[in-house]
Image 1 (cartoon, rainbow, N blue to C red):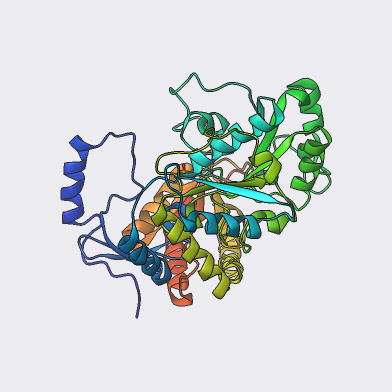
Image 2: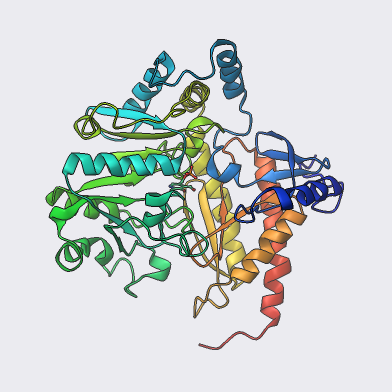
Length: 454
Ligand SMILES: Cc1ncc(COP(=O)(O)O)c(C=O)c1O
């Protein structure tokens, strides 16, 4: 039996009535990918207030690798609800916080003594990783990448690349932030080709230390192991090894922002494992806690201890419900091969999407790692001109046919997959059927338009 069930047009009358109330009550700066109001969610399925059922390829923007309302998470939360809700770890600590820190220290990449502390969000965790790196090195510069996304708070926004809607009009931004090209091979900033480029973009960090900012003024390089909002770009194997070698030669720390790549998304608990790298600091959030707000910074013990007592914290940071949920998520990963499932889902997607690419020139690039997969849409495969309008039409078609997807990319021309890893094969296929039909509807129209001859 199909999972998708649409009883009204999308959005339905009850969602429309809520949108009318939303308009005067909530600022326009908060946007919604799909203006339907959720009533229930389970596994990889959303149900709206009009009784329409959707397959969810977004997982609350990558927060639900373990699935909506994972039974293990719900059970842990129910137990915690019976005990206590909030005391603030800065007033009286609790065992679950320590146990979770121990598990993060054990399971993050790197066989050296580590320490972890918790925040509420990814952006807050990024901010704190920067504070720790500066406190440890006594340097202030931070190097970040083109197409990076690190959050919406002031420092995280400064580290983020895309101008609209994230940064434009919100300045001045914190200083001492330097931006270098990422290994985005489909749109190489140096117009080179991998592998003949010999990863010039990574080696170029040496040049950055000569021409842009002195290495002795740089505390850290921060990178997403796979670009998230920037379009799900997975660099070639040695990119990070080269960067880290250069960083360490100059006493610069390497921070991995695993907020979106973490917790099984890329086919390992952390994407750094896929690259065989050990960051000095690792930032996690999103799927760490099965739908509760939690961020974490884990790192080498001596670095994490740089800020003095009281230098780190936050009233709600590492709250007991979020810690209980995260411990349940760790248990799920221990007992179920969710990372293996991520690779399996990524393989299924690639197999189908490669066939689509043969038919539709609108599909410029198909890429990803594990279940972090995406399609980049272009007006022409020759010019690679981004196709944001067509991308929007495809996601719109998907919504109207019961599949919730998200776009990404600096040019808003990437469709990304972030389905919960507990999605069934039937649901995955049904979701991909809708995506295929969307390409059929939009890409066939593009085919009808004469293509430029290169
Ligand atoms: C890589 C990365 N870092 C940081 C953030 C910010 O996380 P949050 O929205 O929880 O503040 C995000 C959010 O999408 C992200 O993808």
